[in-house]
Length: 112
Length: 117
Image (tube, rainbow over all chains, first blue to last red; front, side, top):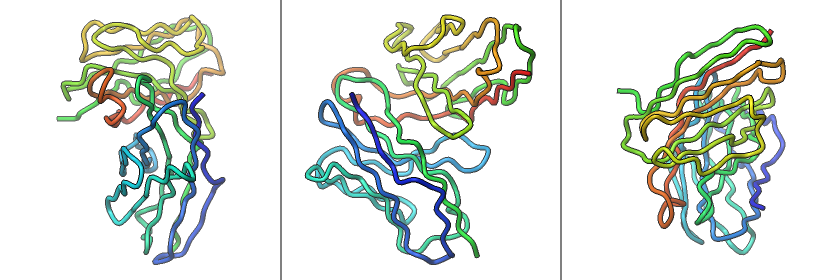
């Protein structure tokens, strides 16, 4: 079946540090890939997406590139802020399958 | 003008009770979902409806019964609540079904935190 593997958390970084959260996937078909963010006490918000190989999704300084050859969609940000503290979820959706399959989530804490 | 709204936000109840959670979306989407998030933040799909038709029904106890009166609403009724049902339940919606749907992100509500004592 479809599955998403994310790096184990929690991740703690200092403000302005470089962030990478690894995500790899297994898909039964051709997937679209997503990153969602969940701030404390809130629902999930779409952060970025990529729908075909080599696409780069970007938003709010975050980027992720769809790498078909390595089945990866790693999330990166060059300089994190305290306000980026949240739980980040990598997810995929395969053509013909209505559901979004999530990774386990990575809790990110940024300290000033 | 909230896109996906759930009520209530918090629900505290005793074992054995029956409760409902309501969800409404004003995005014009034709597909709606219920997800369960456990204490470790793991998200698992429970149900999905497209135009009032059940299209996803994961392995969920039959104490859980979704109801979709129209494509803008998807309610979740839970009978005989158990301690293990304590979680945050998220409603979501998206566009289309079939070709093109896999490009569409899901839009989530803010969740309902259910606590069973």
